[in-house]
Length: 375
Image 1 (tube, one colour):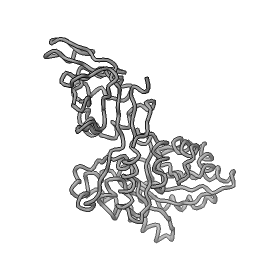
Image 2 (cartoon, one colour):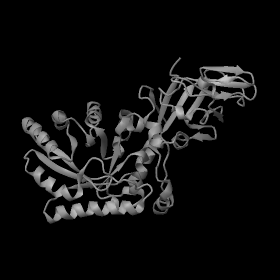
Image 3 (cartoon, helix red, strand yellow):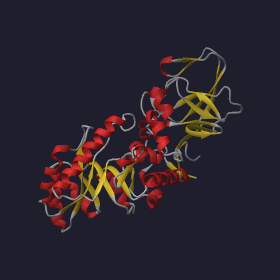
Image 4 (cartoon, one colour):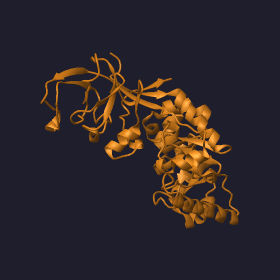
């Protein structure tokens, strides 16, 4: 019978987006952030497709990075967030760069590198206003001096992360100022760090001065953005820039049910039909990643028409009202995210309904669902 629910990944859209950022970044290198299963798109599939078009890959943790290496991804990989200190040797063996923000990490990495008779390559993570992982800006130079005492470590990069480049240009510039001050302090101490990076999708498009020599592009690679409030600024600075959504989520209709007017639908009887109604039952629920908060509010596409979700989203099923779609039958295709005919449902729309963001809508699609390569 084939797949009942699947995610399609558009090769052409993915490559288009990478090329668009290439133009924006000019001489700066492009890192594709493929953490969290490439924002739900399948990290291996995505990495294989765009490796020729990017310079680096970024992962959240070492496990993700090792999976890429095990599957023949050759480009440099940086672990952006965390790893077990006892597994530093695995990173060094596989030529994976590690983030460092504490002396203890450097000590463990140097020890592992010494045993392997190799040099580990690290990037220092500096906190400039996000208040997450990272050494405080005023302490960066001191940490770098300490790390330089370890003979088996090479400091290749310095990086930080913006807190609100999508909607707060003022604070973004404050953070950029902190980052530049760190660089100045290192220069005054005659400490040279070759690679500097702080730009994400929104800042790369709105603040060219944030590019330095590497930019980390996450949501934009997948054809989406989070910078609605600064959209005019982005458009002004990049008039020919465009993104194409990479993901489509589809399912086969399991059954079509005929209900009379006045019938209740689903757990809790949260919907009552106002007329004779046809319900299409889809093999998707909150286990598959279709948020329960979409109950009675979201729509899916069937026959090129928007069809309202009726009743609560179940664990593995959902019901859609297809009364106004002619000749619907089991086996027909429904679209939960993506295009069908002239209609399109984007993760932004579902995020707005569910009170969350497009990132979460995509990353929470169950990784057990097959990801299939499309055009």
